[in-house]
Picture (cartoon, rainbow, N blue to C red):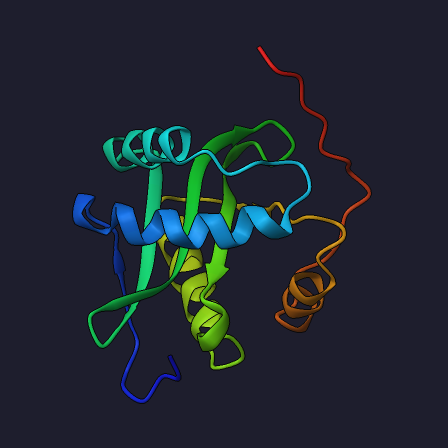
Length: 153
C-alpha cells in the first residue's frame, strides 16, 4: 500500500488490536531479543490500553488502515527528579515507510509525554536495526552509554 491520503495519528482503541498485532509481528521479525507470540502481545496491548494514566498507544491510520504504531509508558526517573517516558514498539508498515509516518508518531508521542510532565524520553531499539537507528539519529535522538539488561521472572 502506497499512501495517497492523509495520515491520522490517534490514540489506539480495542478495535485496533488485530492490526497492531500484525505490526508487532513485523517488528519482532527484526528484533533479535523477542519472538512474536500473538496471545502474549494481545495481552500486553490490552493491559496498556487499560493503563490510561500511565501509558499511551498511538496508531497511524491511512484510508481506514492502521499503518503504524507507537507505545509509551511513564516512569519515575531519579536522574531527572521527575517523570520520564519510555517509548517501545515504534513500527510502520513496510509499504508506508519513508513517508513521514514514523516521524508523525514520534512527534505525537513526544507531545503526549510533555503533557504528562515528562522531563525526558527514552527509546528502546534493537542495536542491529541500522535503518531504525539511522532514522532516530536523523530526528535528533542521541545514543547513550547505557545498556539495557533484562531478567525473566
